Amino acid sequence: MTKFPKDFLWGGATAAHQVEGGFNEGGKGLSVSDVYTFDNSLPKEKWTDQWHLMTHAQVEEARNPDSKKYYPKRYGNDFYHHYKEDIALFAEMGFKCYRTSIAWTRIFPNGDESTPNEAGLAFYDKIFDELLKYGIEPVVSLSHYEMPLHLATEYGGWPNRQLIDFYVKFATTVFERYKDKVKFWLTFNEINCVKHHPYVSIGVIEENHPNIEQAKYQGAHHQFIASALATKACHQIIPNSKVGCMISYQLLIPYSCNPDDVQKTVESQRSSLFFSDVQARGYYPAYTKRMFEEKGVVLETEVGDEEILRQYPVDFISFSYYMSSAISAHPENLENAEGNLITGGIKNPYLPSSEWGWQIDPKGLRIALNQLYDRYQKPLFIAENGLGAVDKIEEDGTIQDDYRIDYLRQHIEQMQEAIHDGVDLFGYTSWGCIDIVSASTSQMSKRYGYIYVDQDDEGNGTKERRKKKSFDWYKNVIATNGEAL
Ligand code: BGP
Image (cartoon, rainbow, N blue to C red; front, side, top):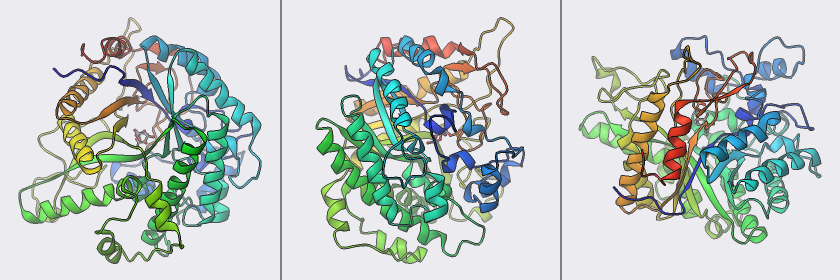
């Protein structure tokens, strides 16, 4: 079996808003994720609607300190107070890198201040120093669904071009502060998720938004410019830095060989890769014109935008991979097919699903790696991959998460196949290396970690950390550089 490169970056991933807690400590302001509410008691058919909306009413309730509603993202797993213990556990597993994000609102609480919050900067100094003490490389996302709420409510989020300056100010502030500690940076987490999580870039979305597609792509244009300017600044401030884009990648498969299914699948996959196309190639692809016509999008750009995009593309492509989905052009004609509630596609009868309906397709990862490498010819980094599952504590106190080991083993085997195919893959950070709050459902019970955290969906628990069976398994994977699976 093919060996992994000797300096392969094995590690784990989290995000500030899902792991840290301390939402109102150290001068931190509220981000859109701190007020995002999700009612997971609703039937799964209602879940997608919730992802599309974040109303002013929800925001006002969340701002209300006396609100009785529980906002799990604010509490994470309390990494804010447990980071030394947690990073020591990552080091025990032998992590070569650790991916997380800097909460924008710890550095600029409202996002439009002229001077940064020193307490926030000092917090991440401590995190990065702790990581480097063990020789663990930080891989840092600048914005992981964590736009300051103030920029959403007072400026309308990314559709407002002023956000470019606020973001570049934030980026250059942290590049300067951490230039001797961090060299791997990701500009926006899952930048293509604005398609189904518009609150992450637009912020407050009422049901009757005048033109949501225009807002999504105008906001994306400003993010593309911001990403390019951040890439420029990063290379100037941190000479040996590497900047990546980050997309959510679902392999899309035609449900049948009907040419209509094939065409719809090609269009759907391309509409998702549109975001990495612009960031990695440095220009809008030829298919943009027709795609925007069909969506009713007319971009407002400024002189110089094209040049900025062309001059400062990203250095590498990072992506999350959890699942694949089958696409049918005529789902209404399918008698016994079952809809995939998560992706809006069709359930693939050849694949198992997780308890949350995510279709498990390890072979799809090999296809994804080859497709992305063929498309961009830039180094690849898997920034997220993992299995959200309900873990059970046995009588003897152990957690036998063989299902998670199987999931990860199968995906790592496909990474080896892709490397054998010639793909330049330089790192892998499995998602949720420690139990954290789910982004889409706000549940703690959707556990991904090698480390169990005693906390339930309402935030109750001792926060005690406990190694699962997968902890020693992954430790051995890293120790043998992927040979022992
Ligand atoms: C990705 C996000 C991560 C993480 C992951 C798992 O879309 O980038 O933040 O949340 O999905 O999804 P979930 O937490 O909803 O199970």
